[in-house]
Image 1 (spheres, one colour):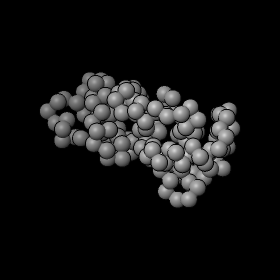
Image 2 (cartoon, one colour):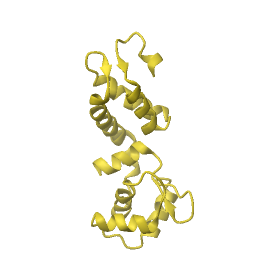
Image 3 (cartoon, rainbow, N blue to C red):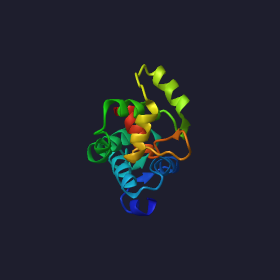
Length: 147
């Protein structure tokens, strides 16, 4: 990233660079979108933590319109399950997902059925029996903040 910024007069702080890689997990298109939006938020040639939230939000909105909304052409129950899953940053058991659904006042019956459907659609992962996870950090943030 820093090599691409050479000669532009813009610098990303080390913390912002770390966050970009943490959130994108190295996905090139997501890096491009997030960095483009961060670049547009620069102030006096510097992109620091104060620009992070605005750049992240704009990047999520772009990814939502161009990529993530395609994933969300699913049933309302599946969306509710995704909403609950978006609060976890690692694979979790169904019992924890059910607890989160109750906290969010979501009415999800047959939760395992909806989880299996989302795995089949490759929207969530099932890394081990009975554990589910939204792997893509930016998609997880999008679901949590915009759906």
